[in-house]
Image (tube, rainbow, N blue to C red):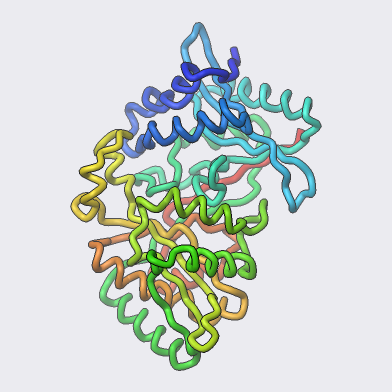
Length: 363
């Protein structure tokens, strides 16, 4: 039986379902349930921009799904995007969830669905994990059981894109390679690469927005984010930001912004200890608990995309890693078509650590 979430009680069941589903998983990391509840309460119960549904049998919760309808610029029509797909290993349960969603799609004259995407930030938690089940997920990436892919395929979903997480090697040898390549870059280009200035954050965000507007984007399903959206995301991430690993590059003479990269400490290492509960004391002492990072995003304007600028940016990030005690990091998730990024990281022993698959289906 499918039940639509219409109140706080059912929303809590929706959110806490993973505690039971993944109780025996070695690698699943519970999210901050407080933050997820706050976000989904607004999304599902206040603005009602997304629908959350539950699959029940004799009041036992077996699966969940969140979906929303949004305009897609590429297709020039509304598309159904789904997320928070979790269920037991049962085609019956999975099919029941998607049949309900598709009936709603037909009522709204929508014929195509795609997922998974985070409803809050489509650059994160995108795709079903299909490779890399032997490792913990880093911050703002997802983890699921291997059978999820089969459930989607059996229902008729097909691969649309893969997004990958790359894991370059942090070592003295690679640091020497970085330094040599950066020296070559600086001899050719009059560019400055610096950490973000948090005291002038408004100006910095405006420069990031300029880069977004002209850089080739791998967000195939949406246009570059607005300045207001960038400010909103920056505000939400502010408690997690370490300026040492948020880098902006500019031309020295004109001060024109030409590239940036954002890395975050892997606070999932703390969430694994606290099992999804917020523990302020642990968050105030991240160096004690966190030794890896995630490269959230990187963008370079077309003029500098094959120049070696991204190497110079990551050389600066490596300096930050040393200060913060970071021993490893994942770069991603990167669309599989973004060979330029993957080529850059392969120079440093980078390998595809995880693959997330975005699925789509016509009805």
